[in-house]
Length: 145
Image (cartoon, rainbow, N blue to C red; front, side, top):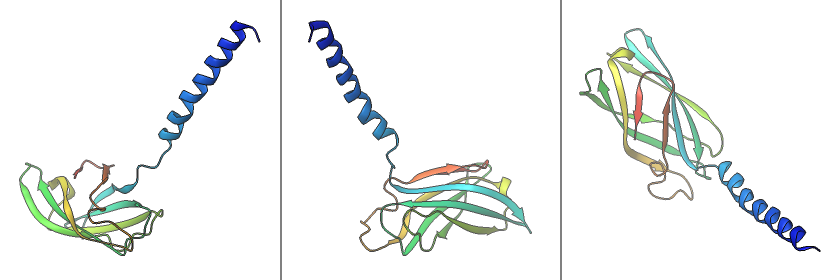
């Protein structure tokens, strides 16, 4: 093989080696729990919120309860409450709804996921519900964690 062809072949192999792992990393599942505030709607003097939850922990959760803090439109703490997400099977999305009485949705500026009060499942490590927790919102209400 000529020197130029050898160099060209080496360069092609090097580039192939560099692009392979980067592509694999781009599609790797981040793991953890993903919680999306999907909708927030006023219903009979209350704010009904719907979460889309995806358990990517690799193990089923038999219980998942989060301590949350609701902040009003001025940024002040409006209340502390618990959101019981119940059981969350691994790799299967679930929708959970909660009705927050006595406040309209535009009266809630932020929801802070303060911690996991309960996070149980066979083979689930301590702290798994809060480690790698990803929060997103499709509404005007911001999620923090």
